[in-house]
Amino acid sequence: MASISVMAAMGYGKWAVGDLDEGTVTTDVIAKEVEDQRVPLDGAVDLLLVGIDSRTDAHGNPLPDEVMDILHAGVNEGERNTDTMILVHIPVDGTRAIAISFPRDSWVELAGGYGEHRLNSAFAYAYNNARSELGNTAPNMKELEKQAVVEGRKNLIATIQSLIGDAVTIDRYAEVNLASFYEVTKAIGGVEVCLNRAVREPKSGANFKKGVQTIQGAQALAFVRQRYGLPNYDLDRIVRQQAFLAALANKVLSADMLTSPSKVRELVTAVQKSVVLSEGWELSTFAAQMSGLNSDGIDFYTIPTQGPANIGGADVLEVDPDQVSDFVRSLTTDDNGQPNSTPAPPPGEGSTERSGEGERPALGLVTVDVRNGSNTGGLAASVRDLLAEKGFNPGDIGDAQVSGSSTIWYAPGERSLAEYAAESLPGRFELAEDSAQQPNRLRVVLGTNYPGETSGFGSGAAIAKGQPSSEPGEPGAPADSSTTPPPQLDAGGTPCVN
Image 1 (cartoon, one colour):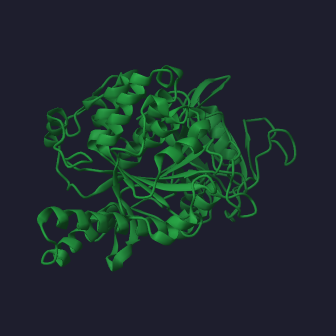
Image 2 (cartoon, rainbow, N blue to C red; image 1 turned 180 degrees about the vertical axis):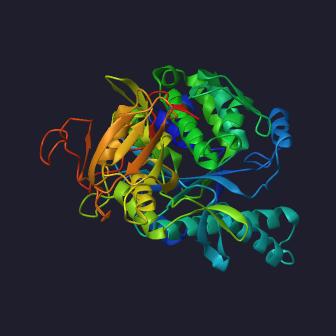
């Protein structure tokens, strides 16, 4: 997303930096037939943005000592694990971008015949296999490393392409390393982020106060790397990364940056040091397409998951490929199955929404726990999955005392979250404030009045105690199932995250 934002900024004139295509490291990982079918100005661009734990920059040079100090303070989990994977869909007019994150621990079928493993190992399996098979044929170690890395990238692309189905075709690849967060934020003078609470976590080097603050360099790297000590572990880290990228886009596309050729040069130099792009990607052409993008036009999502599991002793996240494919399709095509030219803005006003009770966080920052107080088995898991498809983070499930009514409990000031959750489900819900409820977390208790059939969206309604609900067709009635899921956050504003 850093490179996307930079190229969007470049759309206002090449005079700022000269030839954008000079000095950029490229890799041959996109199939020729895919490249031939996709011309940026004639169709949507679907690129895979990958973050990798490499100890060198894009040119193979060692990372700065400050970055290496942070890495050595934590656990070295392998330089070939891809811990950040984001599919970015950019419609033809370039005025909006949809970014879809893939959790690293998603349990999937890897391409290349490597079986089922965590998604972030797709690169490593092919890389290690290539080093073994090509060891006797490569002319030298440098060329062996280069060929193995290409095979790793290709296998990761193929794995994610298989997971998302034919809704979109990945036609661009952008790989960032740990230096990207360090170099880019220093070049632009830092980005503004917000935390729900203070945090100090030694493995990542994270040491932040509560609230809004500006981070850059080593702080930015620690901010996007931390996952230990977070309530939702890697899912919270994904939201951290999305919030960081949103802040980066907001800063890069600001008037302060766009009117300063010197700042733009520094930024492009930083990106070229830390980003690898697929061959045939002409940044000058891409910049022209992205010139109409602004920070409010970037929406962030995460694929739906079916919750944590332990498979073969590994803690993973289960995913349903059909559900993932349908989710991606819903974001990238219109009601007739045609590619979106300019997607309609999703529900909500961006990363935060103000109501009479104050400001609420974006849906993807909110976790929903579900308790089954009905006489029908399996409802808690079904409802959690439905809410996950709507953009909420899936929480815990369990049983509750049997009750005749269904209730959604929310923390003080977060009624609007409960209202949206109720509108996303069939049946009627009472909404109840609970001072003991954690912020950014809902508790859904299903009663015997909850419909047993959970396949549809949009038939639910929220009712405060003693107040009637909206009937279909009335103002405020929930949207039907064809509406685009709301984003976790967008690049406008500064959402507070865990």
